[in-house]
Length: 301
Image 1 (cartoon, rainbow, N blue to C red):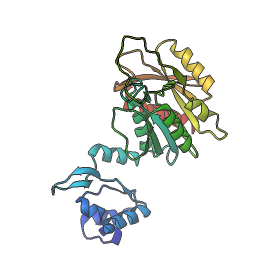
Image 2: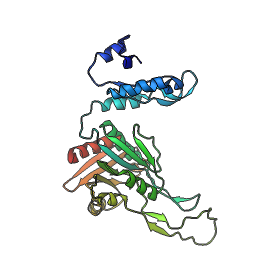
Image 3: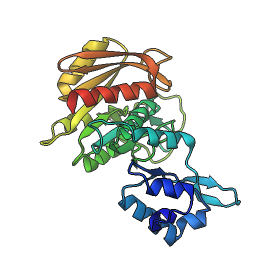
Image 4: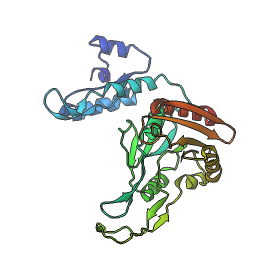
């Protein structure tokens, strides 16, 4: 309230009002106070003046209430403070990222899926947000926390993910297809649970749409980055995918090792484009995410 009114009545407001540097505030208060029209109007005014606001978290408060108003987690504050000091060509760019695994129903109980956790995609999202990009996430089945701030769209099946991508791809500057999308779906999923029997069960599968390839064929396509999760003939398969999909780069991911790739917090990848390849040694997915985004920033922007 003091900042909005221009009142330098304490040390903090005096320093902020006398400063010409970027300002970021992290409000924390009772949930009812935070939701009040006065506070929301003040925050909106500060944003219009160029001050960045870290949204408070939801949870238990000192007064006993539960709701919006908890101070944001220290890791989130540190992440957003760090992003203020980054100067990249990604600042202001729109990035669409798919992540996680898709689920193809066999019946109401069973499904086809894979081991993707979504951790690599979320690490890329964090790196893009740190670099100042506007990030949209299309999220499949994941086992990791979701990056804030980002626009989030949930898509369970390959069909839903395809529809979500095509509905949101317009005006995107970069598309990163990190999700492990099923290549096949069940042709006739059952409405009721299939009962166990001694008979051989045959499930007919049909190919799903190739999301990355279709985005690459758009008349005004964004920069397209794909992933190749491989277990053999690694470079050959990744280079074939780069050529066949028509994308700008492929990130080769060896998923044959138990301590890398799917579900692991660490990874080792090769960034391959039409001119060269860059090997990124084993590291945390968070650090690899930053390195990959740095490469995209240097090569394509």
